[in-house]
Image (spheres, rainbow, N blue to C red):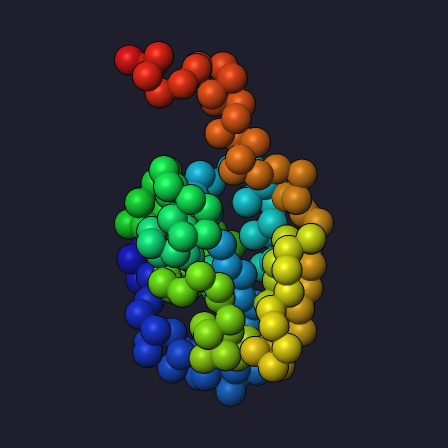
Length: 159
């Protein structure tokens, strides 16, 4: 699935080409630190909004700054590998900033899909449509982590 993982320049060129051919580009972002069923539901709903789904993954440093020490649980290379295997995702890219706004400005997709309740991008950072999706919003990485800790205890108790 490495053909789905693109660098910034290649993805920008690819998106420009697809848009010139009439393709509807949808961008989603996040840490996807511990992929779960809520992510799958969200990604399927986002893909249904357009022709091409681009997933922008926070780098390890970005996840750490946004979510705190101990995160990410899975390193970027593992997250890229797992998520690039999802059939609904067409392209995956990583970014090191704390928000996706600089990448949104660079890629300029027609649609930016985010989980309902998330903070929308800042004014002027994106000219396209912002869509808040409810699919998957009832699940979270934090809930999964808490359930694992509840069932199996703290890391010091596991072998």
